Image (tube, rainbow, N blue to C red):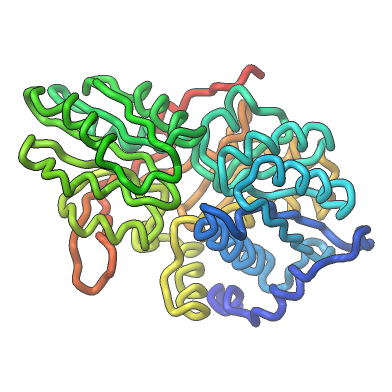
Amino acid sequence: MHRRTLVALATAAVTAATLSAPAFAQTGEIRIAHVYSKTGPLEAYGKQTQTGLLMGLNYATGGSMTVNGKKLVVIEKDDQGKPDLGKSLLASAYSDDKADIAVGPTSSGVALALLPVAEEYKKILLVEPAVADAITGDKWNKYIFRTGRNSSQDAISNAVAIDKAGVTVATLAQDYAFGRDGVKAFKDALKNAKLVHEEYLPTTTTDFTAGAQRLIDKLKDVPGRKVIFIIWAGAGNPFKIADLDLKRYGIEIATGGNILPAMAAYKNFPGMEGATYYYFGIPKNPVNEALVAAHYKEFKTPPDFFTAGGFSSAMALVTALKATGGDTNTNKLIKTMEGMSFDTPKGKMTFRKEDHQAMQSMYHFKIKVDPAFAWGVPELVREIKPEEMQVPIRNKR
């Protein structure tokens, strides 16, 4: 059957697999708990991940939503972006819902709360899309795998665009795990440019004036190229700092990729460089073609940043389950997944044996303004392949 037909099979089949399941597993089922921000500050990201997960499971199973005759049942849990709630939801998923494996969460803060729960129940948690390095770093345990990129992968790839001699950098980030881990990784990745200031603001910030002024004061009198590198997720628009006439001081803005609505702000910065995890128009492979076609068919829009991530997590799960013949024994899955390669919308990913982080390509881009799109279009400068990035192993295994 043609791959696009597979992905575009009736939504009903997918929906049926996500209905609230009975408290105890029935024979012939593989139960997947998806703990994510269905509501809360990162709701947009969470919903994309859920869409991608379901589309990916459908595609990877040829539309059957089964592996080796076992039905895939997805159990949704809304953590609302709250660590304590996420922790209790994952525990109930493993114990009450008899989940064989879990995927999620959206927030790095929630993810750090979930890691010990996976260890306590001796069940796999496949982290997607939470980014903080600590998840596969010092807070890691052997039950944690991650298809999402980590802060180091983000930072190393973005450093490719910025890290040149004579460049002075200041950072603007959110004051929680995602922002702080992101800046630390970015700082570690810089070999030539000089970092002179780190500005951390609350995740709820809407007025960036005071923070921007501190950044300007640190950069305005410095010779050479001056860059403010932004690491931001969710609400608030840090690009408002451009309203303070940064050009007068010769200060540029740089940032990584983001969801399409957030990239509307990029239209104001033609030529801006950075690196992204995913943009639907960049990867050229059959899996991405299938995702893009299915997403356009169902939603009349292209798949976004986190949709690709959810799809990738599904591809990893089904690849592993096919390899075990549908056996969900945790030790067997761990042995199967360590070093395992699998196809995704970004091409091939491989779980690194040492910390279970998925090694994957990133994309160096330059923003182009195209009137046909509501967002700044990231044009590919070049693909940064996994083997080019010396992503540090940060766990204590």
